[in-house]
Length: 443
Ligand code: NAD
Ligand code: UGA
Image (tube, rainbow, N blue to C red; front, side, top):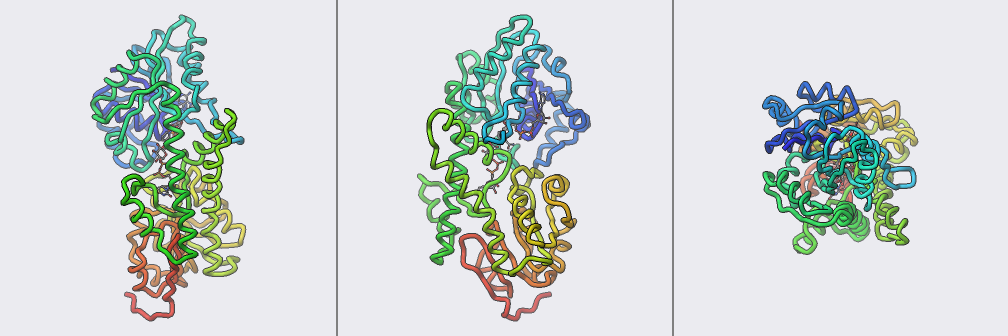
């Protein structure tokens, strides 16, 4: 099938490349000329494991191309995917300006009817509005079919998730359009769940809100664990063994970040409010998440006292491992708070430093290796559990830091391992280990 994807960001690019990989002829459109030039040469503008190799392969076989011209991409197209951003407005509602712009362009450029599929996360009722907008703008009075096909991929494992998802949700107004979308997706061999447009839109928000709730729940439990002397990692494992609860998304830490949980939870609270429902549970989830990020600052002050002039190493800056995405990363409020308290920050991330520079306060010293960041530091804060960070032998902290004090916001190290080293170690929802007075020889 001939497919056009509007918006080649984290979702659009992965979707376009994956649809090409399963045999479709795909054109990805983006308004960003620089991005399109880069992608045309086979380079991915985002860091996402396995994406660039797949991109290059499909460019080579002529199943994939990139353009800034919507009109060109729409020639003879069977299906158009909408994958533009839906960021949040100051009041928390979803900003639909990119969706509306893209819909208007479809209306004015499309020469014959086709299926328009919304991948972007949009409030309930938006698909109906998109269809109306496209048809209203169409000079030739073209009729389209609209399908809601929300995306559930995670950054950092986006390609894997696209090929191994738990379900594909197809919300449609008519069975013919739904059947075409089912055919498009059939090679992925993933169970398909059919529903109506409004329910598909709601499934996306409800899923993200539920996952965010699990995270805030375990973070609340972690606070109680600290007070009563339990270990939240063991608690989560024990809870997760109950299949009704499940083991996933029960990892306590410095709260959820990223481009979606924060904005989608806010948007759902707004959506509820606009429909005379006060979504108290989700409001608390959001509040817990905000306070979770500042807990690391409290622990840092507890460990080293006044931060004025102290050399603080930040290890990991992206909102999660295996991505260069800094949107709503916990490192942002943490770096600002440390800066305000006078700390000298040295920061390291294997991939996200370039993006981080646009989000973090001025005056941070960025290092190109973990060891350089640790050298001379009086305290190290682990913010992202990159493999390189969580597998770093603890002896390096002792060897390179001025004082081996670790504030681990991701519970990277098992406590029984930490106990073997003369380290002062704080983590989330687990007992503090303080063995700095123990003498151990480190090579
Ligand atoms: P993004 O910001 O990475 O990418 C959006 C792209 O659209 C940008 O490259 C931008 O230049 C382009 N664009 C904007 N207007 C355009 C237009 N009129 N024509 C062509 N290109 C245009 O966004 P994203 O993270 O990929 O998210 C896209 C949507 O998918 C959002 O609604 C988001 O909530 C949803 N989503 C994101 C993820 C994720 O992991 N990032 C996962 C599931 C769902
Ligand atoms: C999330 C969802 O997992 C995807 O299904 C969804 O498609 C996507 O949002 C979206 O709508 O954009 P993503 O934000 O890429 O994906 O990454 P996650 O792995 O969900 O992590 C989100 C945040 O939660 C990260 O900051 C992560 O560190 C944190 N997290 C995750 C925890 O603190 N604990 C956990 O147990 C899991």
